[in-house]
Image (cartoon, rainbow, N blue to C red):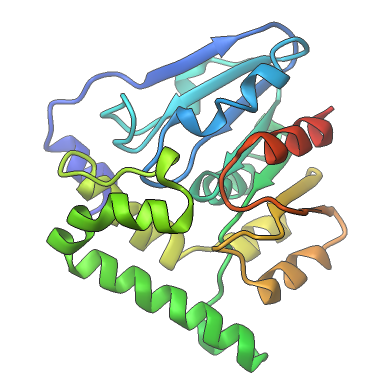
Length: 246
């Protein structure tokens, strides 16, 4: 069952716009898996003095039951699209499909993977394979995953923005399977027509250096590696992203 099919079988509420603040060029912030707009609590205040900043809860997460659709915002001018983690993969995909709508793309902590068979470097192939096996285990063991979600979040240092419950389980596993495990992010990033900034922490638990090297070779991509930062958009990473956007 796809995400769209699942939602058609539910009585859903309209898209939840978590925040719409400031004036100026539009920035849309797209959060990651098992999270919500709380992801950007440190970033949004750094942008609202110069931009109209829109945050949304999408794909059954946060306060939004329905899939998020940027079309519902009825924006007239191209906007800056900023995504974190899963949201960065969605942002790259959107920009690749709708190039005229996006003025610029910023990808924060993108968990970009290729199929292990497509990777020549043995170390990178092993790293990516380990991630994919872990994700498959998480999907196949619902009770274990939900029961240990808080503990895993604390262990990874992402507890403040990471929540898996009965309510968001279907959205979580479909997002994990279809958007992260079966992603098209490398080809999406390559086909985007506007400039892309990739901002990630040197301590990011979900980044594989091998795939980052593939991305950084693309002419329209600028990489920003932030020391002493991990996967979560804490204050240090938020400041770095705000500086990149400025």
